Length: 163
Figure 1 (cartoon, helix red, strand yellow):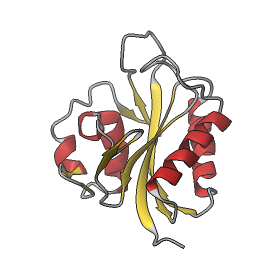
Figure 2 (tube, one colour; figure 1 turned 30 degrees about the vertical axis):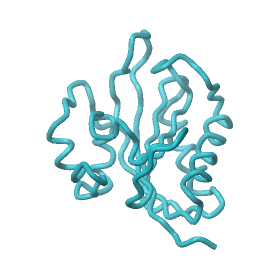
Figure 3 (tube, helix red, strand yellow; figure 1 turned 180 degrees about the vertical axis):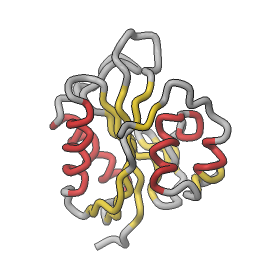
Figure 4 (tube, one colour; figure 1 turned 90 degrees about the vertical axis):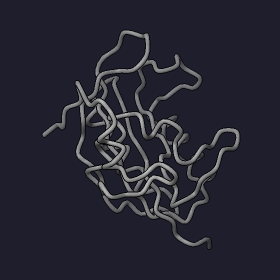
């Protein structure tokens, strides 16, 4: 069995009951074979990205301990999205029932087709960094700095922590 690695996953939803979807998806992630849910962030409301008119998103993040390889974990995330009704390919930056992004996989840095680690836009998105800061503001993003230092550089206008 491979060595356990800490992985961070970003979650987003803006169709249907997004808060319930996020909660159910987090439960599903904790139940993936070879994965243990360690901690989850609060939920955040954030404005949508891109040119398509759509509702605000609900975003969150989790830390998993996993024995899955990064490609296997990514495939498990994509299968979870499909189980929640996500259809790919969809409209880029369009509305979705569930979006799961593998943000960090230990200190792995890679850029291969279909898998980039850390996530290529992790340092520029408040809706990713705010939930990660809930989990660990001193979390190191390989080659970029801590979550807190990245958070200091982004505009979080319109993002709101949900009770």
